[in-house]
Image: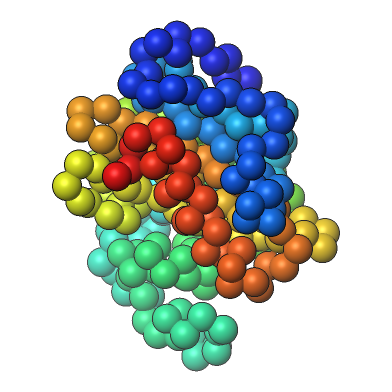
Length: 258
C-alpha cells in the first residue's frame, strides 16, 4: 500500500512532501526516510516515498505487536507478571534482572520478549501476523529471532498502517489489550503534547538500521509517525541518539512539538 498525499490544506502547517533526500538526513550523516500521518485524515507528509515503501528488519519495534500478541493470548498475566532473569550477562545492564512487561518494554529487553515469543509459539505467531497483515508475515529464522536477525521485514508505510489501526483500536484484539500497549508506548506527557514511541535497532549487511515509530498528540489531534535511518555502525551511540533527535526535530518542524 502506498499513501497518496492529498488534502494538504487540512494540515495546520506547511507540508513538506519530497522524494529528494531531506537535508536533515545528511546533517546527521545517515540515509533515511520519514512519514507523518494524521490519524483521522488521509493527509500525510512523506520524506522519500520510495524508501518509505521498502521493507526492513523491524528489530525492537516488533515489541509493540509482540506485546499485543502476548496479552491477547494470555501467555503472560498482564503487564506486571515478573519473568525471572536466567543469569546471562547482557551488554545492556538494565536487562540483567527480573523483568515485567512495564519495564521490559521501556528498556527494550530482548530476552523478555524472546520468552514471550516462545510461549506464543510458531503457529499462533504466524496466525497473528497474518491477522494484522504485518509486513511480509515471515517467522523464518527461529521463533525467538525472526524479528531480530531473521526473515521478518516491514516498511514504514506498513508500520503506519498498523499504528493507525492500533490507535483507533481496530486491530483484531481486545480493546483493553490495545489500550494497554498504547500506554506502554508513552514516552512524554507535557503541556501541549503527548509523545509515544518505540525504537528499533538492527542490521542490514554491514549497515545499521534504526527505527522510531509511534504517535504524537497535540491538542485534540493525533498523528502517527515512522522514522527509519541507515548508518555505518550499529554500536555508534550518536546513531542511536539520532533516532530521537531527528524525530523531535521533524515533529518540531511541523509544529507538533514546542
